[in-house]
Image (cartoon, rainbow, N blue to C red; front, top):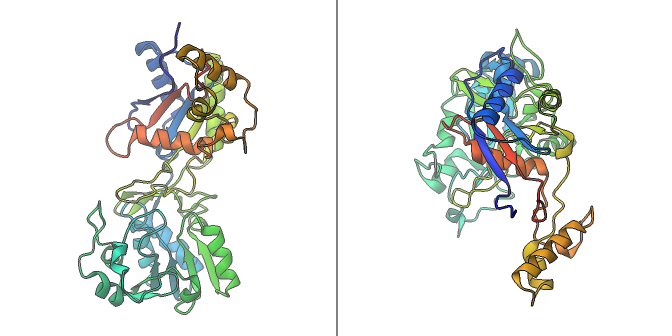
Length: 395
């Protein structure tokens, strides 16, 4: 019998998760209902992807901003230089509020014309004909306004992020600059809080080498519980989301322990080698808004061992065009299947793999899951992916 369906990804609906809920039992019941009521059979190497927010909510991994402020006050003296934060209501605005509440002098250094994940402060075409070197020159807020005018807003959200961050000031304690030049930042402050996500370790090391007196990143804030708060010993404030006007949800703790434990439960119940992962943001770029999306420190903070590595695939289009000319449909199909069955375990550098996607499996699976679950009101924070590790030769 010819197989007509390859990879499928299904969003599974879940109840609202609360602190203290047994996530193992809840997800096990959801999966059991899907198997019984939706005529779904589970297979070896199916992937069950669970959004990070479910685990964090069940853990009660939240922190009020006064605790963040307390942690910051223990680490900084007179000034906090906030380096390269992303422009985001959900991700950074509440952290900016906690920073401002220290009542220290706050100097915010925004990268321009866009942040590291692609959120634009302004259209880069405004720089054409201007004597501005974006790799060297630091702009004051006045110079920024002279360049873009009042009311410069984000393409999708309609928010003026310079104004948004400045409005958190206590007694006018926030100054905002636009720069991509770490060397120039030390002319303004030697107390640094690296807010950049994906180059945080590089920037921390760089500022220390440049002679900064105090250097932390967001990964160093809220690494321990303060007065009973949530915390994340590995990522600190990275991966956090707005919860209320005065609190945030942190990235979950112990993700690896969770996925390994749940895999054992599923193995005992279904006798299948099902893979489990926790996922956050996907890693893909929107062609219109130019947003890269990945505002979490990693796509997946925890995943079972078979999800390690990158795909090992040949490119069917390349093989078909290069090697199978003159064959009829049936002959070409059998030839492709034969090539797949005989492919090497490591195709790195092999021309037959030209054009395949050289990314981590967890990044690909996490991006697929993020697109399926969405970020709004779909109510499907669990994704069942089947057939992902099959290929054209699979029965």
